[in-house]
Image (cartoon, rainbow, N blue to C red; front, side):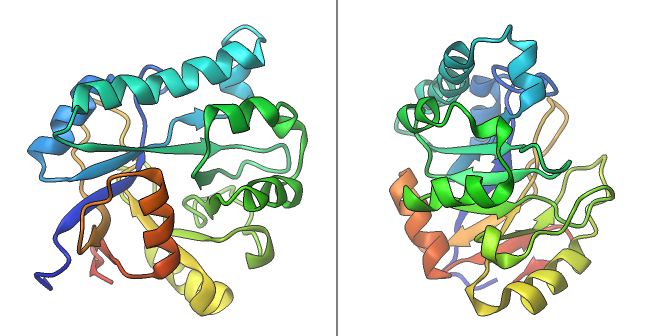
Amino acid sequence: MNAEYIYKTDLHCHTSEASGCASENGADTVEKYIRCGYSSVAITNHFSPGHFEGFGGSYEKFVERYYNAIDVARRAAGDRFNVLTGMELKTQDSFNDYLVFGTTKEMMLEFSNVFSLYIDKVHEFFSSRGCIVIQAHPMRYGITLIEPEFVDGYEILNTHPEWESHNEIAAMWAKQVGGENAIITAGTDHHDTNNIPTSGILTKEPIRSDEELLKVLRSGDYKIFGGSAGEL
């Protein structure tokens, strides 16, 4: 391991306050990541039509609950650990999921028609506001591969224990299609109390804010770690 890259960040994590499929709350999740030696995690709860409809039909209340879940983790972390803002977004055009970094509650309240749009318009909205859109686990069965003009990159390593993400193929796809401009990410896809964080990115300095996360991802100055990948 290159000793310079020592700060661990997981870029794919769910908590029970906003993801109905998750069983561990934000406070316990933070404690787990601290024990596992991470310096930061992006909370990427599901932002999807199914989760919205299950909340009762109020988009404003759904958004409020969504960002409250991130605040729960931040309050638990205090100054011991860095909690970053993310989301796992689903649009109407496919079963695809997209990791979006750099959003705010105000931004998503403005984007109240997000679930009725296709990925081209979704990407256009987020790009105009400085966000980064990553296709999550692009090689899982049932996923439609998205060309690089509609995403900023690809999650090439997803270590969810119950899904086959075909990470090696995802890495090859990102390199061949996305080229040098594609942003690559990795994450545990944490959901449950028995999930142990095992992947993410390594940086030379801790990532303390959403702005720093966007800067790091665009710079390419980080390494992928976890699973069978070792370091990339």
